[in-house]
Image (tube, rainbow, N blue to C red; front, side, top):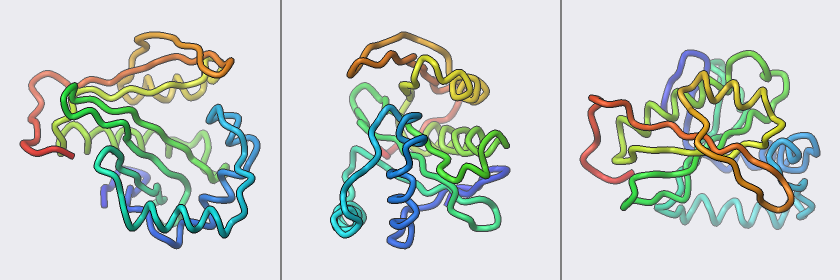
Length: 176
């Protein structure tokens, strides 16, 4: 469990599945994630969810985001971990819209970055955010990300942002 000022990042649990499914089916959230809403029946989603919990991959680490009072409000992760380049991609979603624009996403990302840079050997994390999502870009800048490129994928334009291990920071001895 990782504690920020407003959030707690914790391991994903089976009890998160219903909420995660609801968020993945939400059109507005899918649009912000440059994806399409999930159409899979919940029973099929649940089968994949259980398998992912039981057999996690070493190239991805997922966390639930809870408010300090224990409400599950979103998810974050780092994935496509490259142990040779010492980098990974990060992603975040505050699915509970009542928690938007209140600093929960920024606190979750800062907490995740602190964990990555102090507890793993990773030295760079990056993300892709839609070029029109200025709110997300400003949030990521508050967390220490800088723009390092642009890309086109599936007919959409993205800004690529990165955060790099601050010079002089300690590094972990073992892989994430």
